Length: 160
View 1 (cartoon, rainbow, N blue to C red):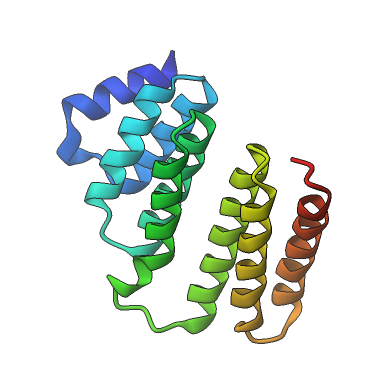
View 2 (view 1 turned 90 degrees about the vertical axis):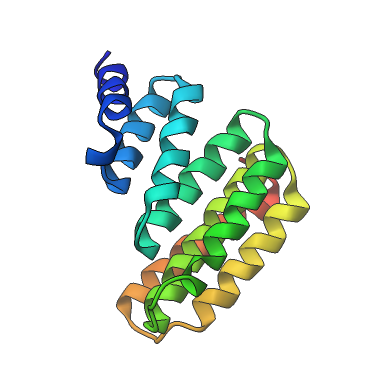
């Protein structure tokens, strides 16, 4: 009920809602299985995003939900656009870009794995590892490497 009320308010005062708020509302709707409205909230958030982090997060969420609702090619397009986001914004922090793209590729791999597209999932986990290799060494990078390794194990077994 709260997710629907938040969506209703967002639709009444769209210029007062931020991309981050659209993300939150979309997530609440998706978690409540109200997919059509969640997709709309994510799409609206993408259109008003004014920074790379918001846009990547919204595109990933949109892609994941598109996969879950059977719009696989549209989901793949959104993941691709999420990977291209940094070309639109001034951000030359290589660590942040590679960190974000590592997670985008992992999310894409899990979306492919969920529909048993194991070859696609494998390709995206390889790309995730490639982005990870561009990151400076350190404990945080090691933590992400561990997440990628766990994902690789599931993908190798083709187990969602």
